[in-house]
Image (cartoon, rainbow, N blue to C red):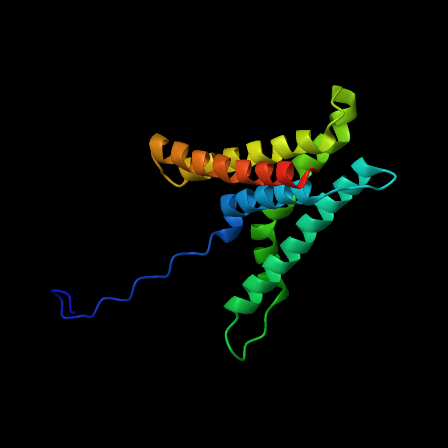
Amino acid sequence: MTTSHGRTPAPPEPAPDRTGDRTDYAGAVYGSMLAASVIAAAGVHASHPRLALILLLLVTGIVFWIAHVYAHVAGQREVGRRVTWSQVCVVGRHEWPLVEAAALPALAVLVSPWLGTGKSAWFALGVAVAQQVAWATLGARRAGASSGQAAAEGTVNLLLGLVIVAAKVAVGH
């Protein structure tokens, strides 16, 4: 294709990679589901069950974060090219919401005795599901979804969270 001056236009510039500039709502939703699943599956019978659950949440979040960073970096590198530390750092920052999503449920476990609830795991599970719904809804809105679409995403995530709650009830933890 040529312009009216007989020149071929330059190819468009690639869009800048802004992965480090915005919140990874998908990672936050996934991390919240992961935290809810850990809580539902954890039958912590340690001498300090709240501490064990807090550590389990945080360690699981960190391990999955490392796995996601590795998978992203390994999957995106070009054959024969070395991965730079700065690339790993950019991906690590982008995937960090996975770890952050474990923090609020862990905090819920920590403060639950002071709130008068003897059911730390159930309180933390409620927090994890609530944040999952909130992140999904907020992510949809920030992506330009209509209010109805955002509500639908929130509803789907609530249903997914309720499946995890049902699993916890079925297992009896």
